[in-house]
Image (cartoon, rainbow, N blue to C red; front, side, top):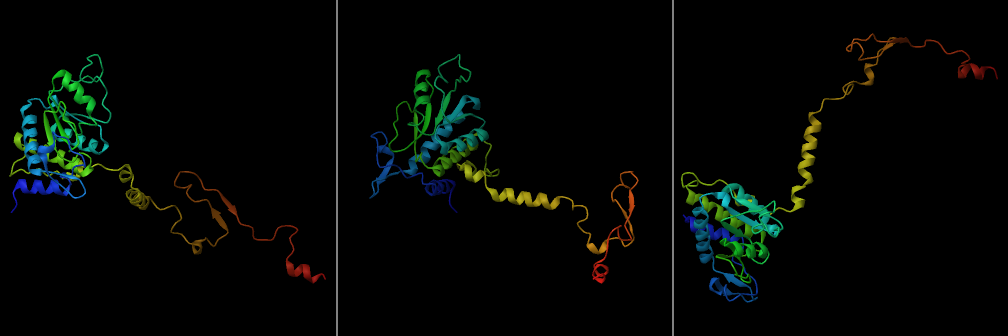
Length: 275
């Protein structure tokens, strides 16, 4: 049976975390395994796994989880950031970072985190720059072309794919829970990595589920009055009564159906007999 580490490496491979870009900075060369024929650099997942464990130790070392803040300006990482913050009880910020969040104390959304986790150093350059002013350590997922300025722990990985970002945050969250003692071999984490995947807006507005709900609601409605009646049930007497009034406490109005032809009416055969 495969060990936990082998299963995690297989998950990273399936999510294409090992695929870098066609460019590589001199600081990221140490994390590159080799280069493919098409020019794409391959990241060494062994070092990625080691850096994930190191980042998990740093997160566990913070006593108050609310002192940890995770950010993602990239759309593919916003759902993963939200789920990561939900399971670890940390603060999160998805979308555009407001300048001055870490430096301007009179701002409404001013924060003083002790640890910062970022999805992409190039996209999240503003919070990295502000963290350098206030001496906040930074953990970031770095691709082969990512700048490492003011990044304290660089986790080499593909930070551009929605599956790779979700797998990284999923493994990091599970490692933190394991180090906290919440997740054990006897009490495994039953959360699936699918919850961390980015979902397209069209997927959330799928019409099939709404159609099924409408059909179920329509079948639960009561049948309209007279739906089971037929024309054969018409009363044979000449008295016609308005139905439904007796139940409401009113006296039903009745009228006599005409038995003879109205005045001035002549049948067709009588009219033809005069000629």
